[in-house]
Length: 522
Image (cartoon, rainbow, N blue to C red; front, side):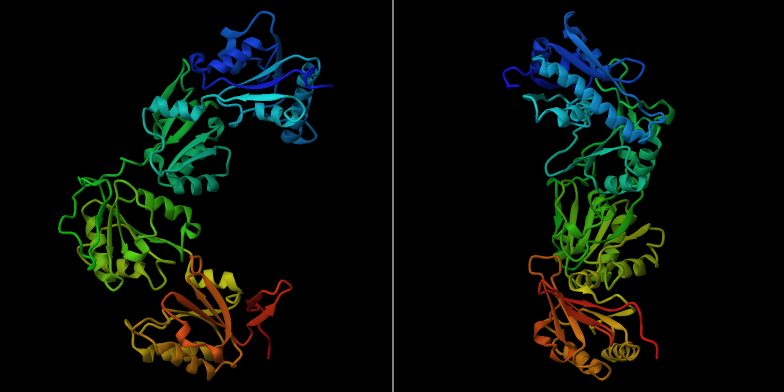
C-alpha cells in the first residue's frame, strides 16, 4: 500500500489535565482525525478522553484500548509482562487496521506522549510502517513545578526524573546525588519513595503535587502526606537548591575565602539551626569517581572547607562559602570547620581519595574529641582510594593480603616507616605506598626500594599510578630493581607486589598485574 493510501498516526500530548493547557496543534489534530484512540483501565474511564472531550465530534470513531491488568494480579501464562505485551500487540493491530483503511488515527496521551506515556508502545510498533507525527504536551513535572511556584532547576543544576517503581536503594542513591528531582508513578510506591527521601536526607525539602491543574489538585509538604491517600497521578518534587542555602549575607552569591592558613574566618556567621561537619572523600580524580551520597552532601553544604587543589574539584554553587587553605594546615582546617558547625553551619570538609586514608577525617575527629567541639556532629563519607583506583587500572595487584604505608616522614620518623616496610616485606604482603616523594622529599623511594629488595626478588612487579582518573593519568609496571625515584612524585602511588604477584601480557598487548587469592602451601 502506498503512503498516500495509508492513514496518518498522531501521538497527541494533552498536557497535565486542564484542557486549556492543550496546544493549538493538539486541538487541530483531534479536529482532523477520523479515529480517536485512548487507553483506560477496566472501569472504562479515561483521563485522556476527559481532557479532550470538548474537542470530540459525534462522528469520531473511538477506539478504547482497555488494559487487561493494572495493579492487580493476572493468570496470564507470561505474567504481567506477558499480558501487557499481548495487549499492546492487539491494540496496535486494531489501530493498524484503521491506518490501512486510510483513516487518520490520533492516540491521546496525558502529559507528553513520549514521557512515561502509553502511546510510546503504539509508536514503537507502528511508526516505522505509517507516516507519524508526535505532538508534544506539557508534562506533569512542569505542571507540578508551576503549581508549587518554586523554580525547578536553575543555572548549572541538573534535573533528575525517576519512576517511583525503582528499588528503594536505587531511589535513595539517585535522590542523594540529585540537584533537583521529580519522582513519578507514586500511588502504591509512595511509602518506598518517602523512605528513600528520608534516607537520602531530602525529605524536608520534598513537595507533593497531586493531579496538577485538575479540579482535585492538592499540594503539600511530602512529609505531611498520608500514604493511604496518594493516587497514581501524583508527583514528588525536590525543587532547585539555588537560594535555599543560607548565604550568611554575602553580597556575592558565591562567597570565597582564599586564606592559606586554614583559620580564615574572623567573620564566621551565626545560624539558628544545629550545625554539622561532613568529611567527604572526593575519590582520586573527577566526578566519575564521586559517590552519589558524597555528591548530595556537597550540594547541601553551606560551607566548603579544604586544601585548595581539592576544593577546586568541587563545582561552584550559588549560596555556598568556600574556604581554601594550604595542604600543611590540617589541624587548623579541622578546627575552623568545627567552629563553623558549632555556630550552626552545615560544613563539608573535602579530601582526595578516601578521607580516612592519610586524609582529613583523622584531623577532624581528633579536634572533635576535645572541647569545645565534643558536641558537634561529625560524619565521614567514604571515597574511592588512590590505591584501589591504581590497582583497578593495572589489573588486580591487591587481590590478596596487602598493607598500606605512607612514606612521608613529616608526621612520623623514618625509622618507624623503615621498620614497617621490613615487617610487611618479611610477611610477604603486597604494599601500597602513599606519599612517596615531593620536592622536599627525594630520597625516601630509593631507600624503600633498598629495604624491600632485602626480602623481594629484583623482578617483583611494581605498579606506578600517576594522576589516576585525571587528565595526566599514566599507569606503568616496572621491576622493583628498576624503580627510579626520579619518576615518582606526590601524585604517584606505588603498588609493590608480593612473591606471588604475576604479570601477564594479554592478546591485545596490554600487560596486567594480579595477585592470586590462593597462597601456596609449604
